[in-house]
Image (cartoon, rainbow, N blue to C red; front, side):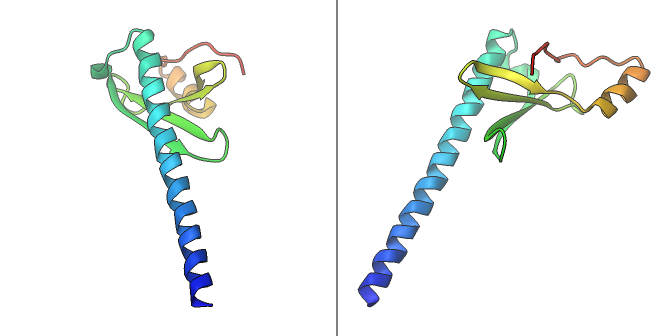
Length: 113
């Protein structure tokens, strides 16, 4: 009986470690893909304040980018079969408030949902 419990506990631990490793690898790969995409768009590493990828429900992996010249704005990117694209920018409420003050988001890309 103890042997079965030990086997089951080991099996569960291996699955958990494997899933965690897979998620970390995918987050790293998505971050690198977004960095390469931004490079293709003409940005350099010195233009970016932070870039972080999270695992979530939908999309499964999303990358948040904050640019140095806009430190209070977060842009969201995803990678799918069509490649990397910006899928979200500041909320419409933030946009309305900012545009009322004459502010235009510097890194917003035109995209189709």
